[in-house]
Length: 115
Length: 113
Image 1 (cartoon, each protein chain N blue to C red):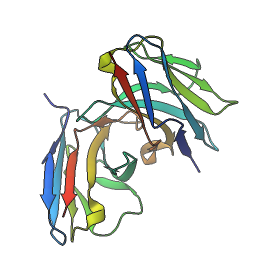
Image 2: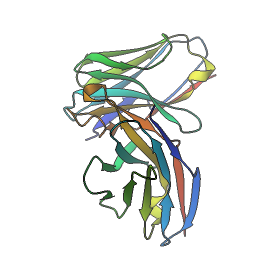
Image 3: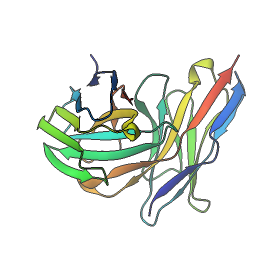
Image 4: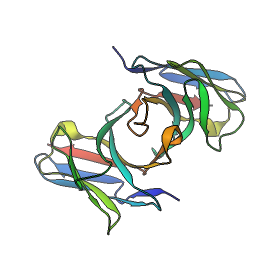
């Protein structure tokens, strides 16, 4: 069965410092991996995705994640965070095919950026 | 324009009542979803509809009944509300084969007292 584990429930970090949010998955089939972000009082937004090809994927706001098959990980990184990055971050694995596909989410990591 | 909207934003009600949450998307998507986010922020899919047809029905109590009058709308009706139903309910949508690239509404916070 597919599952996702986010290893840190909260990550406090100072502004302009680097950050890594850790995500491990288990899947017995082809892997599709995602990071979603939830800003306070909002719904989730897709941040970045890995479907195939290059194992390093990037978002438009400076985040990147690397698919590591041997370690079954998809950690999210940013070299320098801003106050506006404060949010809940969810790692997810896509499971199923066609219109029966669904997302299995991890427990979420709260990124708290302090000035 | 809001892509995925939900009403109401907050819902406070007593145990045993029946309530509905409405969702509308103006993205032209063909698949819509309901998720439940519990107090620990764990997010789990409940239902999905594709072109008004029920596709995914997770192990959700029968008290929860989704209804999709058309592709743009997916409502959630809950009968005989229980304390454990308190949560944030999110609606989402996706298009075609991109089922994992979902657009979420702002959520409805349901509190059962």
